[in-house]
Amino acid sequence: MRTQEVLDKLAGHRIWIGRAAEKTRRNAQYPDKAYGVGVACVNKDYGGGADAALAKVEITPEGQILVTSSAVEIGTGLSTAIAVRAADHLGARADRVTMGALAEWTPLRLQTSGNPYTITQAEQNAAASNPRWVPRLNVSTYASIGAHVHTHVVAEAARIVYRFGVWPAALAIWGQGVMGGQAAGQYLRPEDGQFIDGALTAAGMQPLPLARLALKAHEMDLVTTAMAHSFNRWNWAVAAFEILGARWEAPIDALAVQYGHGAGADRRALLNSDGFHLLDRFSAQFPNTLFQRFGTNYVAACGSIAAVEIERSTGAVKIVDAYTVLECGRALVPEAVSAQAQGGFAQGVGFALTEYLPLLEGGPGDGDWNLDRYRVPRASDLPLWNLEVELLPPLGPTDVPKGIAEVVMIPIVPVLLNAIYDAVGRRFTKVPVTAAAIREALG
Amino acid sequence: MNTVRISLIVNGVATGAHEIPEALPMIDYLHEYCGLTGTKFGCGIGACRACVIIRDHDDGTSEAIPTCITAAASFDGKKVRTIEGHAVDGGLTALQQAFLENFAFQCGYCTPGFVNEAQVLLEALARKPIPKAEIEAQILATMDSHICRCTGYVRYYEAIRAVILADPKLTR
Image 1 (tube, each protein chain N blue to C red):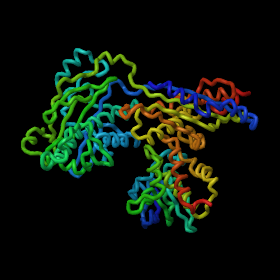
Image 2: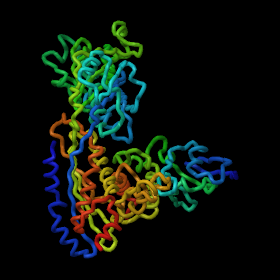
Image 3: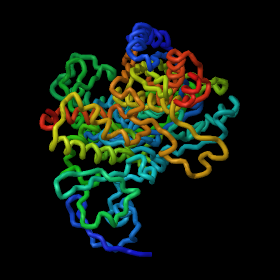
Image 4: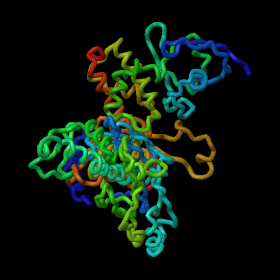
C-alpha cells in the first residue's frame, strides 16, 4: 500500500498549501460568500474473494489478435483494458474483443461443486483431484475486479500464445539459413523477446512483424489459440500443464489450446470435439480455504481535495477547485482511469450535495421519481475545467492493474463535508447537504 | 385511434409517407418506422436530453429537439438529422472523432444527444463566431442540460473545446 505517497501528494498540493491565504483573500473580496477546503483519503478494497474469469486469445494466420472474455462490459473501460493487456505479450492491441461470452467455454469441459466461500479444505482437496474441477465457473462484472481479475486471464492466455506459438515461430525464422542463420551465436530466451512497433526482436535478431510470425506459427502447427480459466481467492489458483512437451506453470487452473489452421494429423488427433486440445493440469494449488476468512487482500488508494464557495444568503455550494490523486498500480489505459476518476468525482458530488430519494412513502416506489426531481449532478455542479486528476506512476512495469472503479467516488463525499465545515464552521452528518440545510444552519 | 400521414427528410433521405398514430412520439417513429435505433430513450420527460435530434430549418439554422416528448406528426414536411446521419461513408465528423480520441463517453447512452447538441453548436458558431474567451461558458450554456452518469462531463467538454479551437472559423 502506498497510502503515505497519496497523503504526501495531498499535503503538497497547491490547494492545500494555499488554503489559509486563499480563504483570507476570498472572504475579504466576497464577504457574502464563505470559502473552505476539505481533504480526505481512503483505501478501498476490490475483489470478491471468490472470483473467476475465462478468456480465449487467438492469432489468425493474417496476424489479427482476437480476444474473447467472459466478462460483461458495462461501458468501454474493460474491453479497452483487455485489448491493451493482450499487447503485453503479442505486441499489439487486440483487433477484436468479444465480451460477455457464455457459450464459448465448452472446450474446457469445466465442472464445479460446492460453495467457494464455505468449502472446507478437505472438500477442496478432494474436488481438485478432478482436473476439470474449478471452485467457480465465472463471475459478473462487479467489485471493481475488471482491471485485475478479468484482464489477468487474458494476459495469461496471450502469454501462452506468445511462448508456444509466436516465439518458436520466430526462432524458426531466425534459424533459417546456413549453419543456423542469424540465430547462430546467440542464446535466445523467450523473455528477451520484445515487440518494437509491432515487430518482435531479441538479441539483435531481425524484427519480425506479428503477421509473419502468426502465419509461420499456423504453418508449423504451433499454439495459435489459448483458452484459460482463472480463480482468485485473495490469491491465484496455480497449476502446471504440459504444452508442446514443456512444463508450463501459471496462475490459471484450466487450459485448452489450438494448433494452427493447418494442424497435421498427429496434432488433430489431440483435439476434442470442439477442436481444442484440452490439457490436463498437474500440481494444481488452489488458494487455502483459510483465505475465506480474509475481509480483503486487494486495495487501491485515492485521496482528494476540494475548495468550495458557499453563498451565505442561499446556502448554495459551488466547488471552485479540486484535485484527486490515485494509486492504481499500473494504469492499463490511463485515459480511462482518469475518466473513471472524473466520473467518480461527479458521483461523489451527487452523493454529498444533490441526490436524494426518500424511503417508503413518497419514495421511488411511487413511480413518479425521475431526473426532474432526482438531481444527478450536471456539468454546472462540477469544477469542470479545474478538476485535476493525478495517477501515481507504478513502481515498475509489472505492477498489477488495481481495481479503482469504486474508490474514486468515496473520498469525494467526506472531502465536500470537510470543505463545508471549513467554510461555515458547521458539521453536517446527513447527506445530501442541501442549500436549504446550510442556510438553516447559518441562521 | 386517430392517425395522421407524415412525410419528412431524415438524414437527407425522403421518408414516408407513413400512416402513424397522431400522438406517436418522434423517438418511437424513428425506432419503429425508420429502423433508426441510435436515438436513446432516457427519462421520457424531456429532462435528460439523451434523445435529442437535429431539426434543420429552412433559413439554414438548426436546433436540437427532444424526441421523447415531441410528436412525430409535428415533423411532417420537416428535415431532421439523427445520430446515424453524421458520419459520411464511414468517415466520422471532427466532433465524433474528438469524442473518441478524448475517451469522452463510457456507457454511451447519452452520447447521441451530446453529438447532436454539440454539432448544432458547432454549426451555429460557424455562422456566428464567438471570442475565444467565451468558449467555455458557451459550451456549458449549450450542453449543461445533458445528463451523463458515467463521465463527470470533463472529457466531453474538453473534446468540444478542442474541436472549436481547431477550427479558426468558429472563433474570432
